[in-house]
Length: 252
Image 1 (cartoon, rainbow, N blue to C red):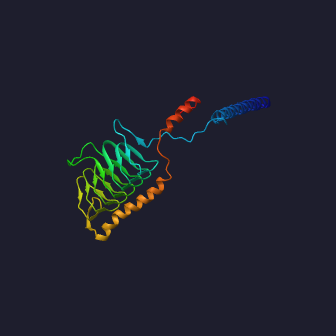
Image 2: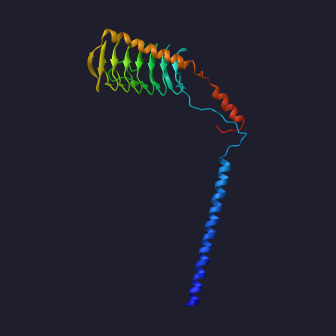
Image 3: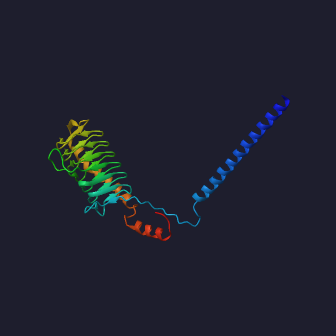
């Protein structure tokens, strides 16, 4: 029995020693591979570093290319695609998307489309009205609004998070309160305040309130001019950057 016990202990010790050596060898291999991978990931100190992004904000589609007036302000991360026209003094703020791939989108003189708005236009309107999206002069569209194939006449305010559906119409000197939904084909008459989901008549605007509508748009235009003075002009310099990177053998 004593001999059997000594033999068993020797076998167990040998087995544990083999497992330990195997584990140590495995860890060594892992450390070696990790070191090689890290060396492969680390950039060479003489590699050219580019502060360059390939995202384009002005996207032509077929024969249609967005048109931006010289004194209009379009933020750097705005996307304009297709049949989009931004008129004199207008401003389109950060994160907005104006997608004119199906129909025309017009942002009128001294109007503003604020942050994260989405403006689109359908092929046709179920109401039979024009399907293009028109934001006329001195219009303020609050942040996070959705405009689709609607018409906003001059000197109006659209509150934040509002939705204007196909064929809807906001007439001159009107206000749509925040988080309102204007159903397809619905019309807000001149000089009225509407609100709700779906939007309903609230009251008639006073003369003093109507006079303040274009003043708000003008104030935002002044602020846009300050931003515009710090904005680098749009160009095709990225094409030259890509050529230079190819000549250095750097993957794009």
